Image (tube, rainbow, N blue to C red; front, side, top):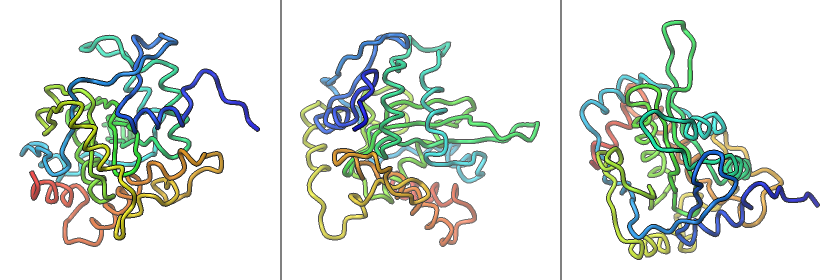
Length: 268
């Protein structure tokens, strides 16, 4: 039997914490210790309440960015943890980073990436986000942008993919002016826990493949090392992303970005 890495937070413990409405943070990038957070006020982004501005809708329709799911998880979390000139010390420590990499390997943590081609003709990662998925819930952890609207486009695709995957709750943890401008709202932790419990109810007839094996964006099944606690825990985002791409290709829209802009405009 393989021994657990004492450096990382055990995946089963991480998922139990999220299912209880708790998540880990660190005081700095170099801090070996973590602490568990249960905010008094919780930010969520209602999946039918995404605020799509005219400028963001235009960016989506132009398909300025190529968007992927689970293509560069390690790079996304590294960018999110990197020092920022306009931000305080990152709470994403090496221990937290490695713990979520392990959770990603087990199919319960995912990323959305945005790519852009520069003047030199080389495509580069310019934005993205990552988070934890389980049942009908996705808990967004962090996002970054190296170009204007790169993280907003990633979030728009996330919302659309979660809707296609049958999700009900998008947790943002803490509200920020940036998230509020995109539709995030704040509510007491007790209300959040009620929404969380409802979103974790047992599967019902007609549910969208929430509890099948933890699929990747290519449809691959969970790694053999996944335990009963993590196997299939977060399939809703990659499955929803794949369904979104398929629906956009089958629809009358001229591009995936235009399809998403139309779908989000109908509910904004």
